[in-house]
Image (cartoon, rainbow, N blue to C red):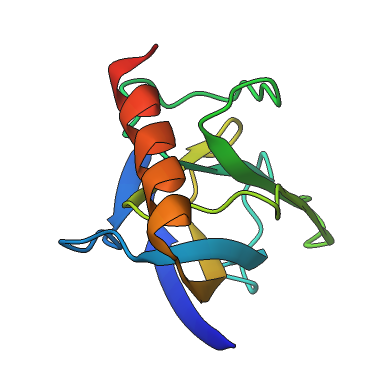
Length: 147
């Protein structure tokens, strides 16, 4: 099993693209780990920090604090809270049965202080046979076209 990891500091209201697509689509991925951490543990903001980070299969035109598990383009979601006393709380949900073979998009919304947050993602790399490749690619095409 091959694991690829990605990390970054993402600002409030921003979308990061993780480039995964290949010419033949024969490499698939599955999220196995998704974590968030503060970028500044020594400073308390007046409002604290309440971050929501989501991973999607398609680019997002709107970055907001809503979370809809019925959205079939949502791959994972994580929240991070830091109180004014610097206590932290984090949780994440990963839809781990989902295999994809295209780019993924990480979005962040902090609905109290506008602070950035660090993310760490581990993806399991999976070799797809022709039928799995076709299914993953068709799902991605359907998600992009919105049908």
